[in-house]
Length: 292
Image 1: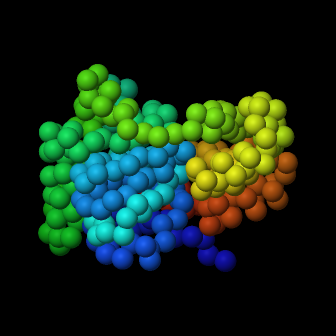
Image 2: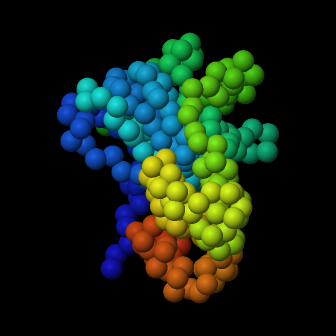
């Protein structure tokens, strides 16, 4: 069976501007992206669940979401919902990320589920919305300079976001207005730090003094995932990163605490939509294309 098509098989930067009216009919699923995402809400009454944290958004709030963060849109009221979002392949920007400047710091050096939101006041103050509109205009263009302009605008937007987040006064504003359950957050942090181990519900029950049945109910309500599926999803996300770096499959499945290759294969295919071998080949091909 052919593997799942990767988002970036045809383009390294993808921009969408979506408008929906009957949002109660739209099914927003829990997911991760193949690449990093920049999201701007233009209108609507929604919240975003990101790795156990809930962000209540207002128009012109912006989100920074890494490809390791599990997230979902939550519709609060059935009113028109309009947004622009940018997906990009981090490997495509690798040449601009170096020891003197950490270009992708807000995606890759941030606690998952925290610091995702840049509020509307900051978006307007720094005119971030204009970058979204400009890159969307170029995305729809057929001009020969299209891809150069899109790359240029994206780089400027990311640099400006980094500047905002490194400003101590603005950083405090970014940390505000996020809801999370401290117990679930502690468990998520523990899972993320122990992906090399086999983690059971009984282990979590003992370590965090919480009944495992209540934990399952609470965890599913907050994250949208069962505990077991969340653990497996995080293991597969980390396994994908290792495979992208060229690490042998035989080393990867043992690194993340799977009992055998068959267990790893089944879990990986279920979560990634393709086999580990298919993913490794596709990752290598994308890397080769990016270098050209």
